Image (cartoon, rainbow, N blue to C red; front, side, top):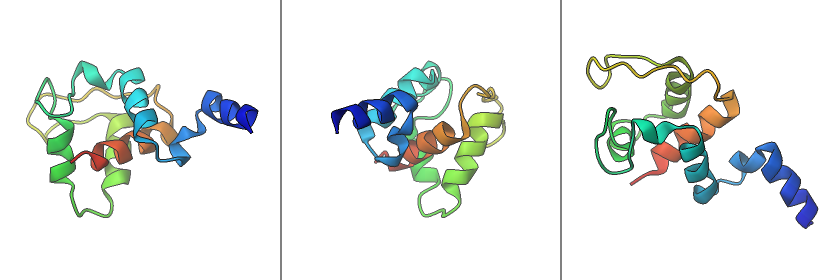
Length: 103
């Protein structure tokens, strides 16, 4: 069983577990912290601000996953969010779910 878990972790399948710890690690690994913090504005909005803005929006995960990959501007002012094409589609979804889980 431990070998299976190790393979899943190494393969990046933790997104299916819903582990906040794993998602926090992915957030850090994906360099999101260069512009975002959990509870304070940096270059971009805090994760709490983003979660609050999209609270109740059933399409928020998809919207944010696309924004993570493609970048954008205008939602939080004129400072652009650079695209993150190196982030896989699956990881972008995990990151979006993580951001939306922040309270």
